[in-house]
Amino acid sequence: MRKPLVAGNWKMNGMRASLIELAGMARAYPAALRAKVDLVVCPPVTLLFPAVASALGSGIAIGAQDCHAKTSGAHTGDLSAAMLFDAGANAVIVGHSERRADHAETDADVKAKAAAVIAEGMTAIVCVGETRAEREAGKALAVVSAQVRASLPEGAKASNVVIAYEPVWAIGTGLTPTIQDIAEMHADIRATLGREIGKDQAAQMRILYGGSVKPQNAKEILDLADVDGALVGGASLKAVDFMAIAEAAG
Ligand code: 13P
Image 1 (cartoon, protein in one colour):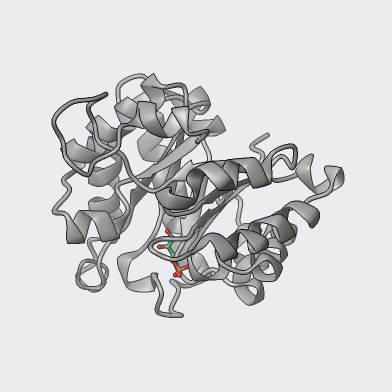
Image 2: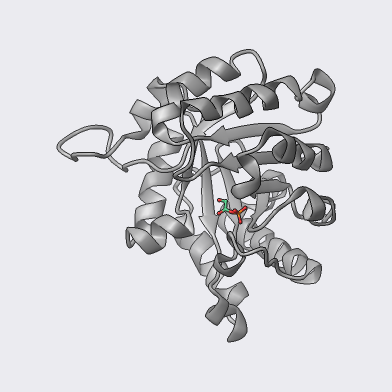
């Protein structure tokens, strides 16, 4: 019922020459795989426009990694959701733990950004996840549930919001939670969504796992009932790795 989504987050990586990887992804995404798995690649904003051109007709959607909550105005250096949509983006990652940490973004900020994204008709990929200290203290489920409740925008539906569960300590570390811990967290997020947006929408909303997803571990994680795809950092920079993960989702 839920079509898996594999999303690539290039973070602050990628020059124009990196678009060759996107072209490689497009070549390795035939109609048969397209029918089974959605793909979105979120390059740095400098590459947004050429990435849209290079992905044209491939079925790969292009997204951004952040936006401002306002539509326009005196916010030097910031980009609005409307601008990203105008440049060809279909999705925007909001509330990534690196933004929450580096730019002190709160759940309220994330909610406002997500609202701006869906107001433009794009998909908000809303990131949540606990720190290592929170997991060790036995608070992971409570922390993530609170983040989901406080970060979801008004009008969130399965068609405009995707949740990405990314344990902070699993990002870029090669570490992942146990399969049981991932399964437990995703089921708990879906239960939280059910209370927030109703059981029907919660049953349809995609919940991605992110944090050290590689071709080697993707299948085991993606086979879990409540895991509807992956948000991939490092392994999304290479077409061969990203497409192996896409295949594992199919
Ligand atoms: P890695 O896949 O490099 O661990 O990054 C995950 C992530 O933060 C994606 O948003």
